[in-house]
Image 1 (cartoon, rainbow over the protein chains, first blue to last red):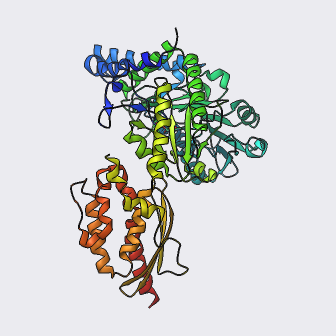
Image 2 (image 1 turned 30 degrees about the horizontal axis):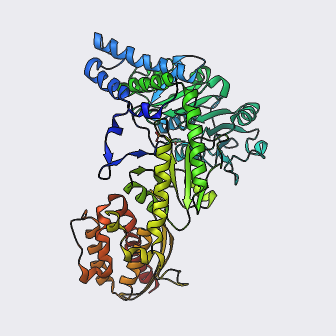
Image 3 (image 1 turned 60 degrees about the horizontal axis):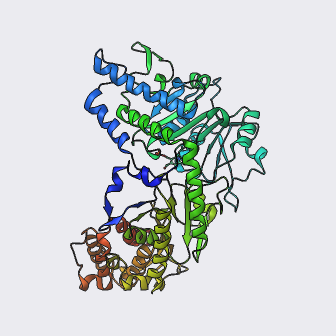
Length: 418
Length: 150
Ligand SMILES: Cc1ncc(COP(=O)(O)O)c(C=O)c1O
């Protein structure tokens, strides 16, 4: 089957509408969130229409159906990621942000003697290109425990500087938490060296896969990481549903983070014991319809084939990069070619602030994001106060790239007239 | 084009030729305000001579709207008393909250009435208020500092 973005777009009801007085919607803000195919919208609403009940609780048919649908989604996620221990290793959260906070808080709860206990003398490693969601939880954990935060710097070529890897991941490092693909630069990070060094010193590796899971095939075994987090809404799924995957032996040792219903085994007035993983980490009635919708989203992607999606996006990124290189006074903030890079293209234009670019693009029906993209320290490191970001997905095509570049040229003309 | 009501000539003119930019060496108070959603940043110095705003200077980075707004504000408020300034700030804040329904009072706001067009763009209201919020903060701090000195 050949890959046709035009055909795919027909599955997404939002592309039937226009913006800015009849203009075609050119949606290039996929790094923030993706649009949803009809199958996802329908599976979420069908859950409410037909099967709605609290999972794992009711003694009735609806509760059983709801539980089957919810647990079925867990199976789909496990298969999508290639979770070595199967569906029980998949924990549903509300978002990647919650998944990463869950880890940071749970590790903060670990008693002395537990492998996750961190304190003075321990080190936690991140990178300079992290989204705030994978930086601040670790900043806060170090502040609470007296551990030290260290990070990989970003080179002028927008790559992680691994030249000092042994000085960054030191013998006392307990946690290494890195992004798979930068949500600003598009850089895909080389994990093998980081994973090898982290495991050599006995640290666990956490992967923020928010910007990779939607765009490439993921095989957890091949990646070699210990935990992985992503958000459903960037992968064609609903908002309000995220995933945390971890190796079963690690999840067994990790203390819970949220306490309440559904996560317990036995409770007295003064004590409680925990249900097995994954229930141990899913306190309360979860976001059920959203989990089911995520299952539908991943099925949609699997039907297309993640290798096809990735190959298509890389080719499209190459097309857009080439067009952008030809625009005068435009500087790409990220790798200049498609090598180890995804379809997130940030840029600056000499003399025009990103917010003004974004406003002009919007008037032409082109939706992008401007600002520091929740990665303020990266913007500081690059000495650019803000940038404009176009992020591609499977329903975008060359005409969208052309519309973006035409609008950039239009903005230069518009703001150049004064 | 709708966009022209946002990017009025006066605004882009202030953006290209900002007034009172460059920080004074001394000040009654200095504040830094940041728009956390986009990273726009301004540092504002205020010099108070009793009740009189004798000098306002600034330094900053940001979009045309935020920078033009600070530039126009410093033009407008320099030489005014704190009381007069409070009236102008209130009038500007009301204009920015008007969602395009108010034309602004030219007797109070002078050139700054062009920001009426900006009030139609909810995403940009914060940009235009950045400098003004900094001024409010600076005025309070300057009064406290001056009281402390005496
Ligand atoms: C790399 C990366 N990490 C984490 C997040 C946080 O995702 P969410 O806001 O869905 O929790 C995002 C998305 O904004 C992201 O791009």
